[in-house]
Image (tube, helix red, strand yellow):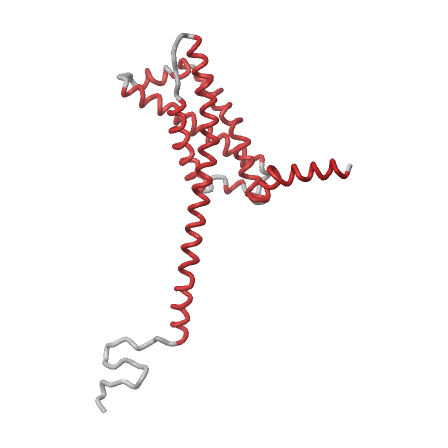
Length: 214
């Protein structure tokens, strides 16, 4: 018998890897193949969830920015200046919503998840209010650059250059974001479906049942 020939189940030639298609390896391949559709399904569900989250953030921020635009347009109209920036508010809302989604995926407030909900709610509201103010300043600076103004001129033109007006705008945004993050944190604790049911369905039904029973 040629010494290079191996018995059945081994390698045929020296240097060839041994045949390892045993039951355990076959089961491993079968398990991996079965898990692949599950992973694809998880990725699809995650993508759908992120799109829904982004859409909700966008609607909330657009409503918030639209109120600011409406207020600014009323003030400017009293000075005889026509101003309509609702389209720009929509673009800004989309950009800010994407920033919020990225920050949410980074779990910036994970150190406060075991604290009372007021802490992560206030922290996130204040943090994103700072982002909002910085984005507003950056927007004015870029617009001033294309208009031939310097950075200092663009910044001084924001709310008349008064720092307290900018701070007060940040405080208003912080308060305006509290309901949004309060809703998010409550959903994280008790579940989004449960919270949705309590607000939009179960609460009304429970009230109707109490009235009937009374």
